[in-house]
Structures are given as structure tokens and as C-alpha cells.
Length: 370
Image 1 (tube, rainbow, N blue to C red):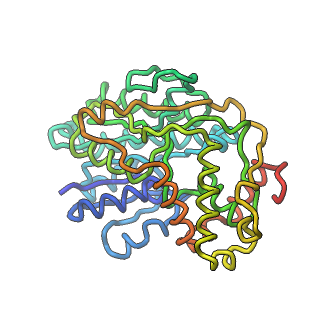
Image 2 (cartoon, helix red, strand yellow):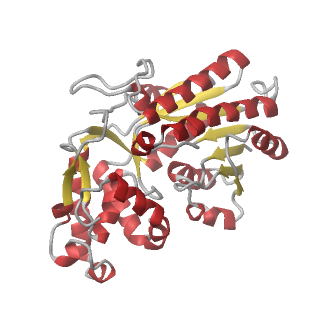
Image 3 (cartoon, rainbow, N blue to C red):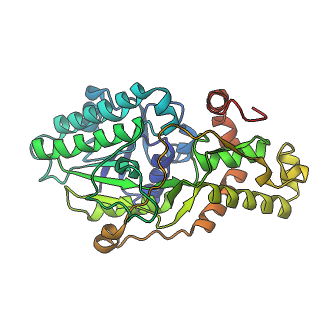
């Protein structure tokens, strides 16, 4: 029986991980620690709480004493750290918040683990797993080989720099203090429970609300798309099979430009409206309800500063040593994602509140309809 602390467990990837782990390991004990900032949503894990499958504690990873007490009282021997500020655009608005959470918060969490686990942590099988991003590696030129675990770090945004710093801290605590750690660097996740500031839910909700679909620059920035369910499977393999001290790249092995992916989402929404006439009554402001293609909402806006052109990770190591391969084709994953947002209107209506709308208006002041 494992006893896990999942930080940021009410966020997008953390919530999906909690659902995955509770289904795959119902005998394990999970405690979620989340500060419930704008992107944390308790509704994402409410069914698990109500069913008694996990305990929720509201708190900040930067509160080292609180975390150490929680680790000790619950005898938690595994930490899975999802807690982070994660949106590049917001990091350009307020870099300091990203340093507080992603760097100082990670340092406090590492110290709490040392305090609670003591010198015998490695022998007892304790593990600190840190969830990171491919953005720490910087930008790839067209045709360049994908990032590997040995690619030098070259972050280009405040967000990426804060995550790179956190990765270095995790490695330093392992080397200096003997903490048992693993790190994973994942590519672009998508799927259920994602806050609508990110590209795909932003586009889905904007289509349904009849708002523009803002595309930075020419929209040809290439990303490696990973369905969150595949990411959760990879994390399970790392936690159950990886030796301590390892770093793992997790990718979807599907490189597509942002503009092409948004176009596919538009087509999927159009098809859903054609197949289900009731959707037009539910979303009368949407383009398909008004007889127009969702693609007609696409607007190119000025590119953000320092926008990386391409990310791609080489998942060969985790495929070879742990047997992981992404199982969700992009078309199927996008279809399932569109379906989830159509079927979970109450969830996104609750999160797409004034805070999100204010951020959208600040970010895209020149788009029509805002």
C-alpha cells in the first residue's frame, strides 16, 4: 500500500492523475494538497472526495511546516509534485509569482520531505517525483532532433526558467541530501479538466460562446501533443518501476502546428452540431448555431514575446526501459476532449468566470467580440 501526497491535485493534470490512480490502485491512500488558486478546481476531484477515495487539504507547498506535519501525520512516503504556476502568458505578466510558487515552493516542499522522512528515507522506499515540462529545453529548429533527457537546458520564458530552476533544485537535494527523487518532463497536455486559458479549452469554449479564436502570429508553432490520460499512465510507470535519480521525457509522439490542431477542433465542433441539433439551442451564440463554420472565428493576433517555435521530446528512454508509448491518437483525443467539454458544461461554466474573462480581455484586447 502506497501513501501519496499529490500537490496541485485539484489542477488539470493533478486531478486527472488522482482519478487514474484511484481507479488503478484503490487500496492506496491519497492526500491532495492544493492552494485552490484560480486554476485549481475542487469540483474536478469532488467525486473522489465524496466517495472517500482521497483526503483534500487546502494549503500552499511553500508552507514547509504544514507540509512536513501532513507528511508525518499521514505517514506519506511518496510525493507527486504537480503544484505550479504553468501558463507562459501569465509568467510574462507577473514573473515573480512563478518564482514564488515554482522555485521557492519546490524548495520548501523538498525541505519538508527531508524533515519528515529523515535519513532512512531511501531505505524505506520514499520517493519525491517532480512533474516538469519540455519547455525547460528551449526551442527546436525545424528538422532538429527532439529533446532527450541529456539536452542542455535553455529556457526562454519566465515560466520555463522557473521550472528549470525547480528541476535543478530537485537534483541538488538528491545529490546533496540523499533525497530519493525522479523527474519527468512532459510535452503539451490536453484533455478533461483543463482551465480555459490554455489553447484547446480556450478554443472550444470560445466557439461555443461565439468569441474569436486568437492564434498567436502565423499559428505554425509546433507542439508535441500528449493526452493527459497517457501522461498519467507514464507517471504510474515511473512511480512503480523507475529507479531513483532518473529523469524521463514523456511525449505524445505527435507533432502538429497550433493552427492545424485548432482547425481540427473547429471541425469536430461543427460535426457535433450537425449531428446533434439540440446543441444549437444550448449554444445559440456559437458559429455553427448561426450557420457558420467554427473556423470563421479564427483570428491571428500579435505573437507573444519570445514565443518558442517548436517543442518535441524523444520518448525513447521511457519506451525502452519502462514500456510506455502514448496510446491516444491525436484525432481521437481531440474528439474525446471536445465531447467532454460539451458534456460538462456545468464544470466549465463555473470555472470560466470573471477572473478568466478579465484575463482574456487583457490578453487579446484587439479581438472583435471581447
